[in-house]
Image (cartoon, rainbow over all chains, first blue to last red; front, side):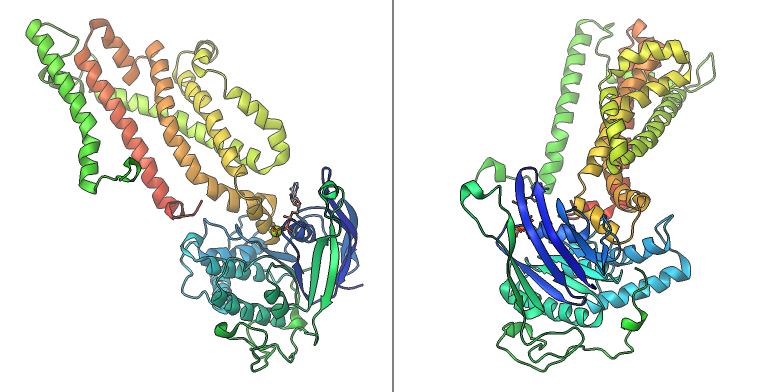
Length: 287
Length: 272
Ligand SMILES: Nc1ncnc2c1ncn2[C@@H]1O[C@H](COP(=O)(O)OP(=O)(O)OP(=O)(O)O)[C@@H](O)[C@H]1O
Ligand SMILES: [Mg+2]
């Protein structure tokens, strides 16, 4: 079984059952949007996929083997906040991952290797629209810029799974539409499976291949502790969206028309196959 | 307007900041003049002239017996001890704080112990230090280390623990090992706090230094003050106290500038 397989996963904190009996399989290269009311356990679920928390019961497999029990470079994450390092400049933030991978002893690279890495990092920053901000510190960036920085930082590691926890929640509609276009393009170009928590159904329908809704099925006050949330809806987007392929309504929607009814030119990927980001054939450098 | 919203202008701030100093100086001058008018031989509040004369003797004339300029040789001896103590304490605290903040196992072993040790009153240990380490430099430096290091270490481990868990997890997804998380994520973010805590510990460090010098020494600022106390030489003690205070103030400012230079991101709005 390739992709992510979640089998009968429960999560309890002390007496409180947060998630009960979640079973789900996620095909490789899907874009899953996770929706549900506040406090139903979406972040908890994402943390388990990340390895930050372990399920109380059940198991989570990736390509048939159990996920490593601690976070690692095969899984990238963008949190709602605290996702970038405040003590590093934008460029240093983006270089941080590859640097630590190349130099496990000092965590820094020097000389030509550093210049090469800086060039890659700059290319990635251009990709997410942050060129020109290289020397700034995160505190000098707007919320939207910080989230794009976090995205760039995570993508530098070429993760197989990208986990996003309400990454664009705090952004204004204009920037959000911009970042959606970016997100869709990156997902088309990079061989990764994306799981994104969102409260915004429009966002879910704009980006995802599949929408999963978590909710409590029993919600009386006396049942609150003993029963957790589970999957209540599992919607595949139709017509199906496929990574790297054109879909009828996957237009790059201009910010002013962030609306599903706005059709435009369809283009799955905006880059030539010999662009600076390698295609599937050379992936992944690890894992 | 409410008091809470009334802010002095830049110029007014300078004037207001000088006010307490001027008042204190005036109070001293008046008190001294009144007492000296009463009894010209009064030693308690010497006049500025007699203090100036003593400063000249201590700082600008070589001592008859040793040939040293006393103020400078005292300062040299004291600062040597202070910096040695603070240096060792800082290194120790950084190591302990980092290990406690980063490794849960080390935290389990060391955290209660460091908390316990930081509650021992250092001055109560001074006799033990003198007995065990002798009356030389080592015991004085050790007193400063024992007095300062545990508090610094606790503060640093708290700062390390206060880093959002998300940052640590994020570093793990960027392929960081425990070691790399310690040196590239935690260490640079607790360094500014180290400098700030060190500033706050300057006062206690001077206290321990002067206490140790007062009891057993043959040089140093604390030694001199307690030596001339026998002759009620307020005209030496006052300048010495002001000098010690100035040294501490300059070190405090220096550390503050250092933090701004080395860690400019700490000055940004919303960085923490
Ligand atoms: N570390 C923890 N210890 C105890 N309870 C926890 C912990 N983390 C989460 N919970 C509980 O688990 C439940 C789900 O929390 P979670 O953060 O996953 O919700 P969420 O779906 O992400 O909500 P939101 O949409 O508001 O972000 C909450 O009731 C919360 O109180
Ligand atoms: Mg959440």
